[in-house]
Amino acid sequence: MRIEGPAVCLPPDIDTDLIIAGRYLRTKDRSIWAKKVFEDLDPALSGRLNGAVIVAGKNFGCGSSREQAAVALKEAGVRGVIAPSFARIFFRNAINIGLPLAEADLPCRDGERVVIDLTSGRVCSESLERPVAPLSARMLDILSSGGLVEFWRKKK
Image (cartoon, rainbow, N blue to C red):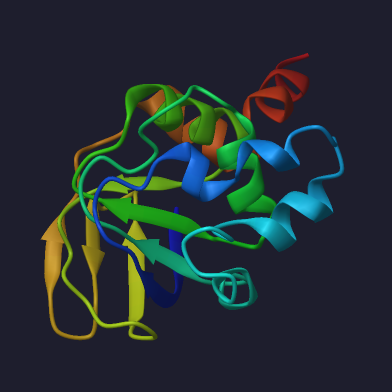
C-alpha cells in the first residue's frame, strides 16, 4: 500500500478537539466536519487537506476518543498521516475507517511531496527516508479494504 501527496506539516500534541471541535458534533453531516476540520488551529487549513498527507509531531490524535476526528480527516480528503506517535484510540479509529497511518519521525516542509509505503515499511520526503513501525497483516487488510466495515463485507 503506497500513499503520496503534498505534506501539511503540523506540530506535536494535536488533539481530537483541534481536529474537529465538539460544537460540530451535533450534526452527522460529514461534509460539515470536512469543512470545519482544524478550524480552531487554522481556519484555512481544511482547504489544503484534499489529497494531502499530514506530517505531524508526536502524540497525534490525543484527547477524547471521538471517532469523528478520524472521519473528519478522511472526509476532508487526507490521504494519510505520518507522526512519531499516535494516541492509541485515534490510531485504531483511523485504521477502522480506512485512514492510513505511519508511525515515523519525518521532518519536512509544507507542500513537500511525501510518500508512505506501508508494504515496504518506509516513509520518505524529497530529502529523507525513514522506517515505519510495521502494521499487522490484519491492519493492512483493513486499510486495503477501505476500512473495517468493508473488510467484513468482503469476508462474507
